[in-house]
View 1 (cartoon, rainbow, N blue to C red):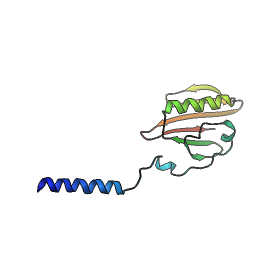
View 2: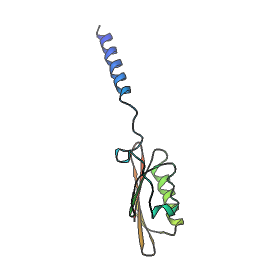
View 3: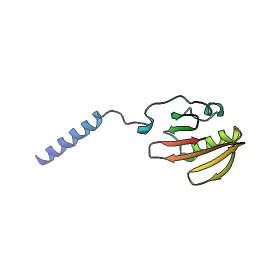
View 4: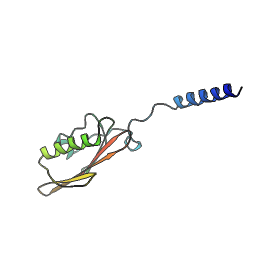
Length: 121
């Protein structure tokens, strides 16, 4: 009887977990995709395989569910240096760039389910 009760409880728990719906692919702060705005639109940033979570004139946040933080960071770095920015300094999570009087920072964040790249102008 105890075994049958345990199996029944596990079965009910499994069905309840399945009924909760699909798991979110992106973070709770990135539930909906937004349109990329200037000045980011002119930089040919690699956003097609990700989701633009937020975009303003001084901040862009993009999340990816595939690849590594290093791969996405490198792809964004290539795009901004191609757009004329020059790398200045780096830490383990970010690098700063300049183009004339403009300053930009790329920050890479790594969560278990998604990789986030944030650009600050």
